[in-house]
Amino acid sequence: MSLLSADSRRDMEIRRYPLLVYTLVPLASLVLQAWLPRVVGRYDWFDLPLVVTVYFALGRRSPIQGTLMGAVMGLFEDALSHHAIGVNGVAKTVVGFLAASVGIRIDVENHAVRLLLNFALSLLSSVIYYFTYRGLLGLTLEWSWLTELMRAVGNSLIAVALFPVLDRLQSRE
Amino acid sequence: MESFFDRYRNLVVLLAILMAQIAGLAVQVRRGSAGQNTLDATDPRGVRLIRLWGNAIVSPPERLIHWTKIGVEAMWTNYIDLGHVREQNEDLKKTVERLRLEQAALLEDARQGQRLQALLGFQEKYIYTTVAAQAYGSSGSDHSGVFYIDKGAHEGLKPDMAVITADGIVGKVRDVFSHPDTAQVLAVNDPTSGAGVILETTRIRGILKGDALGRLEVVGILADERIKPGERVLTAGGDLIFPRGLPVGVVEKVMRDPDRDSFIVILVKPAAHLERLDEVLVITSTEPRFSPEQEQDIATSESQKSAVPTAIKDQVKASEIMAEKLPGLIDPNLPPDQQPLHDSSNPNTVPRPPQPIRPDEFSPGAAESPAPETGAESTPKLQTKRPAIPHVAEGNGGASQPAESPKPQTTTPRNP
Image 1 (cartoon, rainbow over the protein chains, first blue to last red):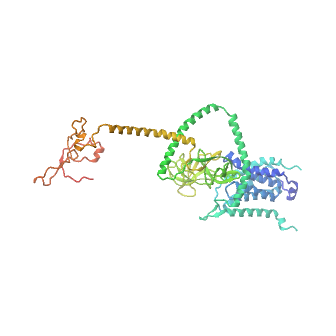
Image 2: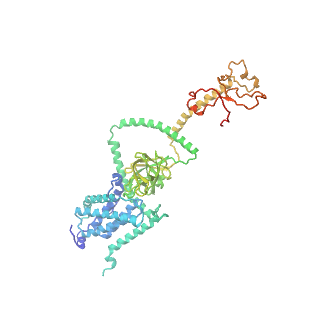
Image 3: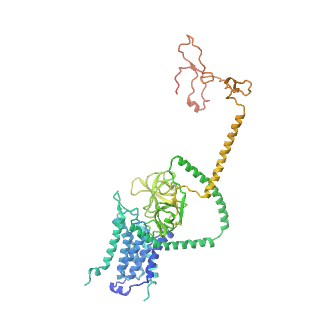
C-alpha cells in the first residue's frame, strides 16, 4: 500500500462518471438489494448500497460527496424497511465520509486493499447501526454479530468483483 | 485567511447531515408507559413521505425485474418443459372431479358448523374473501423482515390484514400504498412481529415471533415436558389478525428461555416457505361468501341430504294414516265398559304378565289393600321378607348370588 500526500492523490486521480452512471448504479444497487434476498433466501449476506457508496466515495475522493451519497443510500434503505428512517442513513453517512477520506490517502486500486477496506467499513457500518438503534434510540433490536461478519465478508468479495466493472464506466477525457 | 467553514468544510457538512438525521430519528421514537422506547405505530407524515418516495422509486424497476423473471420461468414451463403434460392433465382432471365432490361435502359441513357456532353465540372468524398477490421485493435488510406485494389500496388492502399461503401464515399488512399500488407486509419471522399461536395436541398457547436469524420461535411458554418436536403449531385467533386454526409450522426444537427462568422457547419450522414466497393471499374479509359454483354445490348437497329425512317423514305419515284406518283397542267414541279391549270376542287379548315363582312386594297384586285387622293381628309383628339383593350383585350378574332361604328380619326404611 503506497501512501501519498492528500493533494497529490486528489489531483492525480479524481474519477468522473457520466450522470447516468451516478443515477443508475445506486438505483440498481437499491433495487437489487431489495429483490435479491427473495432469490437467495436467508443467505443475503451483502449490502450492495454500501458497496456502491464505498466505491463512489473512494473514486471521487470527496468527503462531502461521499457523505451525501451515503446519506441518500442509507435513507432509501431505511425507507424500504419498517424501522426508523435514519438509522442506516447515519451509518452510511459516516462510512461514505470515511471512505472518501481514506481514498485521499491510500492507493485503492489494489484488490487486497479494496477487500480489507470494504470488510472494515462494513463492520463499522454494522457497529454504527447497532449503536444508533440500541444506544441512541434505546430501541430493542434482535442482533447477530455472526450475520454481520458474514455480511462484511460478502461485501468484500462483491466489491472485489464489482469495482473493476464499475471502473470501466468512468468518463474518458 | 481561510474561514472556519472552508477549513473544516467536510466535517461541518458531515455533522450537519448527521444532526439532521438524528433529529429526524428523535421524532419517530416515543417513550412508552413502561419506560421503554418504542417506534411510532403509525409513521409521522414526513416519514411516510420518505417511505412513499422510496417505494415509488424502487418498486417499478423491482417489479419489472420480478415480472421478467416470472415471464422467463413461465416461458420455460409452458412452452419448453412440456414432458408428460398430457398424462398429468388427465390425472389432474380426475383429481379435480374428486376434489369438487369432496369440496361440496366440506363446504356443507363448514356451513353446518357455522350455524351451530352461531347458535352457541360464538363470534368466530372465517376466511372467505382473499386477494391473491405476488410478492416481488423485500426491505433488503435482514434487520427488517418486511416484503412487498403487488396489490395495494386499490384492491381494498388495509393495514393489519393477515397474509397467508396455502401452506400457512406469512405475515400481516403493515402499510399500504396507492402509487404504485403496493403494500408492505411484515413477515411473521421478523423480531417485531407477533401472533397468538396454540400447540395442536397439548393446547398450550404462546406468542409467535422471529429471532435475529429470521427463525420462527414461540415464547411466553412455561416449561412443559409434553411439548415434543413434530407437534403442529396453529394460530390461536386471539390476536384479531389471523383467524383461528391456520397452520403456522411444526415444533423443531425446545430450548430454555435464556432471559426468563422456567420459561421455554420453541423453535418452529414454518409451514409456509417464508424465504421463497411468490403467491400470497391477503385475507380482506372474514365474512362467509361463496362463489356461485360453490352455492350451487351446497344446494345440491343440501337437497341430497334433505331427501332422506323427507322419505322418513313420508313413511311416518303413511303409517299414521294406516293406523287411523285400522281398528284400535281404544275407541274414544265408546264408554269404558264397551271398549274393544274388554271384548272377550277379540282374539288379540292383552297378554298378562306371568305369575312369579316367588312373589315379593314388587310382584303384581302384592300391593293390594290388606285384610281387615283383627284384635290379635293388630299388634305389631315382625314381617318375613326375602332379603334385598345388594346392588353390587347386579354388577356381578346377580346369578352368582347364592340362593338363601328366607329369614326373618326387621323391616327397615328403604333408602329413597
